[in-house]
Amino acid sequence: MSEFTLLRELKATSGQKVDPKAQKITREIVQLNLKRGKWWGAGLTGFWAFLVLVSSIDHLGSRFFPNAAMKTKKRIGQSAPVRLLRKYVTMPALLNGKHTTRNFIGGVIPTRFESIVIFCYFVLVVLSEAVNYEYYSKSTRFTQKRVQMARYVGDRSAIVTVFIVIHTFLFAGRNNFLMWLTGWKMSTFYAFHKWLARMAIFSAFVHTITMFEVMHWNGSVKYIKSEAWWRWGAVAMVSGAVILFQTFPYIRARLYDIFLYFHIVLATFWLIGMWIHVADLGYGPYAYATAAIWVFDRILRLLKISTFGIRVAHLELVSEEMIIMTIPSVAFIKRPTPGSFGYVYFLDGWTFFQSHPFSVIIEQNTVKFLIKGKQGITRKLFKKLYELPNHKCSINICLEAFYGEYRPAYAYNEVIIVGGGNGAVGLYEYIKDIEAKRQQGKSNTRFVKFYWIIRHWQSIDWLYPELKSLQEYDYVEPIVYVTRYEEGKVGDRFAYAQEATSAKSSLTNEVELKEEAKDEAIEEVLQDDTNAIKDESPELLIKAESFVERIKNDLPHVTFRSSRPDVAQLIHEDIEEAGPHENIAVLSCAINQMCDDVRRGVAEEVGAARSGRIDLVELLQVW
Image 1: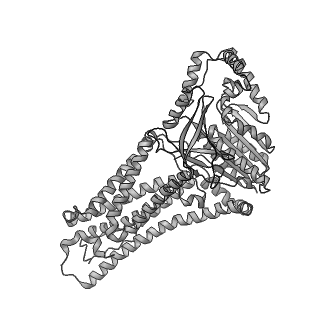
Image 2: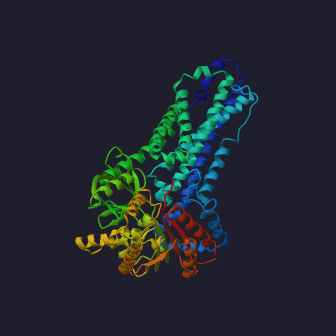
Image 3: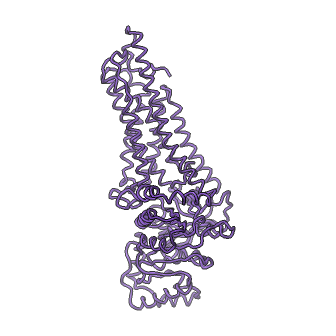
């Protein structure tokens, strides 16, 4: 690259007589500043490379050599500094014990470890653009000190921005290969992506402001404002400014679909603008690398969709609460691991291009998803099924799968599972995985405690087959907390189980709610189940008690408890009961606050002096 390429705005100064020695020194300082920009960019890349290397050794070692990895981690984890590091740095939430719980503007606060990583990277970015500048009073290009220093900052910040953009696009992809290497959750990479994107935009602002001031002071704006590289640089900056505003959590949460597609369009214009802006300066390959990362992710998405093709999915609304979607006769290229999820495209109407992530249950060659009717397409499906006589229908779908980070829970002596609502889906798959490894003689797990927290008794209906199957596993203790235990809101499975049609009608009349209460029940489900039914008749409550007894008799291996549990206290008690020598894995996937309580409880426990290892596996993904 010619150094004069970067000085096109100084055409008016060409032809002037200069001191050869001063000209040489000036050229060397300019070139050194450009090299330092690349060195700092390489250092920023090395920062992530180091974190990925350490995490990959830990994750891949645990996955492929679980027993050896467990012995190593136990030995290392017994030292006091490591225990304190895990308790106060790598495990807890950043502030107030809240990580997955959204803050007052609708955003998610990264964990303490994620926040430290982001902060360290931010410090490196600031240093990369703030230090190692050399002022030369006899410069043949920049006679004024302010022009000279501003130009150096402008050149350096441009190069650093290009490196940050590469990392930003890499962390945004669903098919980011670093997920497989590190075992970090997708939400962790998305947290890094968001903060790196902000740094890239602000770094680009530094470049824009300093370079504009240089051109303004030199009076060279009139020479370059009509050139393509200038105009497309402006397009990139405007796109970045809109992205910065558009990603405000409140807007993102309320208008997600609009946010998503505008975000893709704006990112495209940012990338095109950056490419045209830097192409003639010798930095085009950096833009190509960024585009390659993005295109590679999109191609893999299409390949995953084409692997499954267009499938017919069968949908059923269960107990007016949950949609069970099954896709039969799936030929797997690679079976999903526990905790996996897939993106479903519903080919029904103009929203066919939208994808929605759901955790998966695999039963032989059948893929099953449990879908809660919340907003958008899932709410429309809920209403559609509710209006059908048998609450069933079939629909064409495409499936982009599978995603998710697998952890070898079978390597631990005891596994504590905390699930809430349909969050129990991925957790149940871990129990199946432990059983499969036990059959192969590879599992170290001697005991599993499975806590499932639900609001009403009717939720038993849609996870009934899975709960029933746990009766075969004598080492699994299922405990179900029904937070509205006394309301007796029982689903159809136990209200009408094994009844003939006529008997079912009779029973329906016998235990039917008052019409007003029934309407409230329907409205409750449509409004995300936020209000309880409070006006059942005494006769109904009596009948409901008999249905609850039917549930308990049918699931004798399950312990049912009322009220909402203190999960942090439960974890403490279970760890105390297990003893200090046991290796314990705590798995969670529930509502945001409950997952944060689990994280808080585990963070407290890992600081205690014990010979066994305690690890947290949080399946809930929030971004």
